[in-house]
Image (cartoon, rainbow, N blue to C red; front, side, top):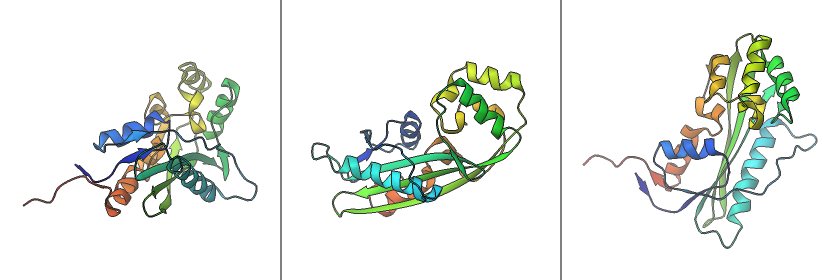
Length: 201
């Protein structure tokens, strides 16, 4: 691994941190203060792109934070075109899981890499299709009792206990976890921020 500049992850998500750690990218975590609000007339793709750009840009704009490359990301679950956020309580989590039971939904993640030195931001959106098996009332109640759904978009974690519900997936697995790692690493490499493997001599 070669890292030519400091990289900052503008997110408090432990899942995003763990994904970057898996591939050995050196980075620091500085969570963004950007509110994850929805705006009227904004498409889901525009929503995650805006938040990803804003998160990276907000942290990059702090003069007391060192670094050159700032990574922002936002992930949403879409059912019938509507955004499913984090459940407010167990009742809402149960309603979300019932609505996803036996059906396919989409997970969208926006990501942005802001280069503080040039002032440019490279951003894109990755989509993944996920299909749940039909869930029983006991399975939904039991899963909610684990506490895992409560801080997850769509009320589930594919990297955790929630994987038992996933019947099929089409697209990026890490995108569903919360960061489309393949695309983010490719962007960092293309911009010269990292090189995972040295060329053999």
